[in-house]
Image (cartoon, rainbow, N blue to C red; front, side, top):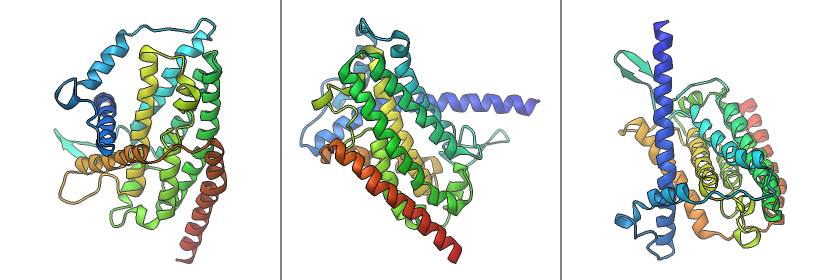
Length: 329
């Protein structure tokens, strides 16, 4: 009984720490993106609020909190209010099963550096992240705006299409490890990272992940030059901020999955395991910023054709090759 109570307390503390750090990282990830893009484009980026603009996320947050919250007259109010919540909460829930370090011992208790290690971890992540698209669809439909509706429809088609390739890209790793637990997947890379054994799967996953989180060059759901910001056109104040948080939380999620599945998770020499996880995660997030600074947006027909006619066959071919190699060896 006492052990169960202690376990519950430790789990609650871990949830609080992870969510707190995650929200802080999301706020400053926006600042990092603006600064990195600025330097890539020979600009300075945020400089006014604080040293080198370090207080800019706080200023933006305060502005959004006190900004007038406008709801369109003919909007479907219940769906309109729920949409940003449905988009944001699943993005935060995925971190419940992502391991970010090895076990540590405190006061004689062995503590896993993961909120909970379930034996179907990746299925949980794929299921939870799939819910986020409902928030985008609800936002587009409930706003009673043609721009928002087009953005929502685009997003649904894109996310469903690329989610299929993303899931199939992970199957090769699951076949090798024979486990759906993310902790087991990290432990299986003690000798060799899966990016070496599954390079084709990693390429498919990386491209699909960029499209799944609606980032350039796959940012068609928003497409400011065409849709006036897409599905969240009619949103303001903190509701708009929640959509922004969801996007960056999803970037961290897909980066954490890439680190766990292909780059050995928290494993590495000399440095503490958590530090290795943070370094690898930061490099993956930098990849998203780099892409946004470099490539123009796809046309929508190119986007869909690439997803169904290129990525999906390649993902299926990778599964077939992996199965053949495992049978022959």
